[in-house]
Length: 112
Length: 113
Image 1 (spheres, each protein chain N blue to C red):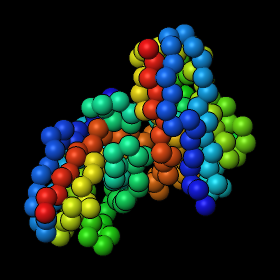
Image 2 (image 1 turned 180 degrees about the vertical axis):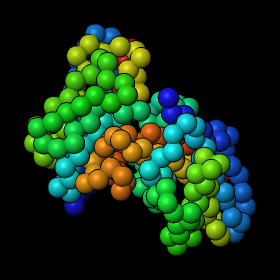
Image 3 (image 1 turned 135 degrees about the vertical axis):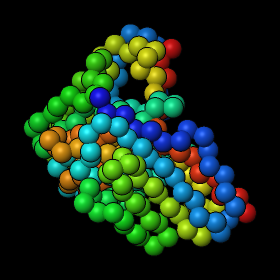
Image 4 (image 1 turned 120 degrees about the horizontal axis):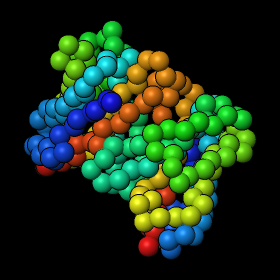
């Protein structure tokens, strides 16, 4: 039981490049989330998926797109990376967000 | 908009003492309040949840209180150990939105032998 896994662990991009962050969970959770974490700031919700086939914007969705590929997988895409997107990205899943989230290990992204 | 405040300064305490961390919030009252632990380079780990109609919740050496009048939650770790050193995040879940979970920036706790 791996929980929530994320790939890659680290990534360096140049401004304007695109990339996709992958996330998978093996706990059969319905809900999945993408957060970003910046120094001195709390985790901020980018997008979430309450169930397979649905996605919704969170607090900071601009510059990102998501795909809920199936119940297990939820990917985050940066179409044209900007230095302001330098951050640590966390994927999380839950059966009920009010009962706590399970987080992955994070992807550290540097955009030059 | 909602604002969550956690002490940005690190809390340094001696092993064996009780650590107390504070989470203050403004505006609307949350339906739930959660506490997470985060170690360097890792994702947050869920610890405890307390509901708006609960005053106190305990789990082993952890105790959380929730005062909706003061708009404050206190997180206590009794008999603290160096292994408790980490950053602790509070998160509030508000009614009226399935996924309205807002995180504080966290407080770093250092327990010294």
